[in-house]
Image (cartoon, rainbow, N blue to C red; front, side):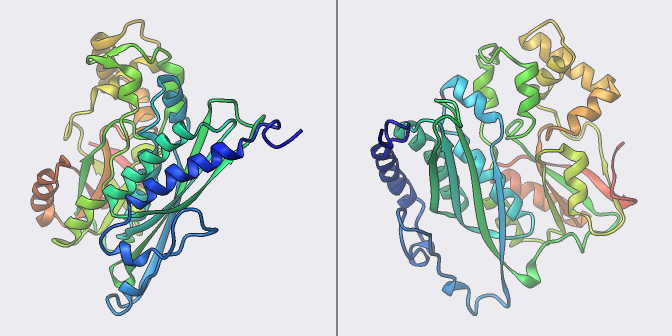
Length: 360
């Protein structure tokens, strides 16, 4: 018996790496062209920090790692693989961004039971798109073929991002004060969180959802907030930031506070997207579909306090990223973000408290 007979196709791996190399090269441009010292296929990726010497008082590297979770199962069932790589990048770079860091480079880890170079390349294509849109470089990664461990046709992907920020400019919530405003940026849907529940309560991925299969709506990739936020940071002071991921509002917004503060969320300050109403209807085993289910779900969120808390404790509910700002900067921030294609609203304020989220 040889390695191929054991289930690992080395030639398919070589084919995949060749495709990755081309995708990685597409992420190298501008300043990164001189910073990347080698290419995909080496034992490790190398990135020079020379451009930051002297340009920053004290350069600090900021790192983050995450995966896509069970959203992958929706991609497998819909046979659509080109967006989950974007999700993987977004989950990492949006976290790093919360501390004011600009993403520099990204590495991915792809695992499967039987490697199909074309499918793997579709997944990594999404990674490359996410890197290009955030100004970072796909500098390396790993593809692991593990027959008998993963089912054939199943893939898992995780990633690791490194960014940089000048230490005096680190955003850690220390400047947030009672009376500050909370500004929320629109999400593109559930992003990459809560899919273990979604897969249980929305089993028919081909159900019509506004003229498209529900599964495709659920695969809308996580929004990448890097460019608009870095741009906004050049115009005004951002005192705190929160990436609304697993745990929704209740777990993530307090993570940006350093003092004894509460987040007061203004109900009705933004419109909750229909996808969350559809999920809410599914959570309550509502025997209807389509627009009727969405209407029922919206009513449940508005009237059922237990369900509402569950939804806001699991999903972003249409707000993917939250900023803490001085009140006088809110209008300028919203106009700037809207102008860059990222709808934003004043969704609440900060009060003295104990690290809680309250709705009013």
